[in-house]
Structures are given as structure tokens and as C-alpha cells.
Image (tube, rainbow, N blue to C red):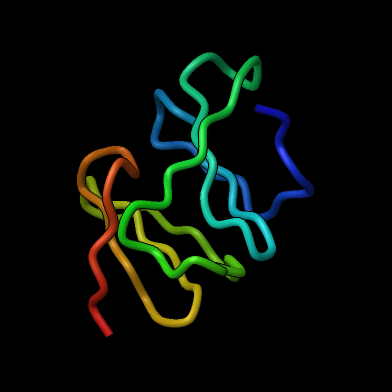
Length: 79
């Protein structure tokens, strides 16, 4: 999967996460070589405004605030 224009870009120490404008969150476990979309639980159109890691959780802001505690495999709305 080719990564679309993305921002922000963060790491949890092992993996990379990229937010995209309208296409949600992308995940890489091989330091940029390949990317997968990780959007289960996010809105279909998800313009990512921010990505944050805190206490072993990943938070994303796009039409609300969502968190993931499984490396972005699934997202849960907290707003």
C-alpha cells in the first residue's frame, strides 16, 4: 500500500503510525517499507488532525477523539 500524503507521524517505539487527511490511520511495523490501513472503528472519512501516544494507548482526533490499545487494529470513540 502506498502511503498518501500523511501527517502527523508518530511512533510507539516499535511501530510507525501516520495520519492522513480523509483516509484515517496507516501503520508500519517495518520502518516505512510497507503500510497498512488501520481504521476499524473510525468514521469512513477520517481527516486525522492529531495522533498521540499516552499510557500505552494511541489517540486520534478526527470527527471526535478515538483511542486504540491494540496498535491501531481497532478504535473506540471516547467523545
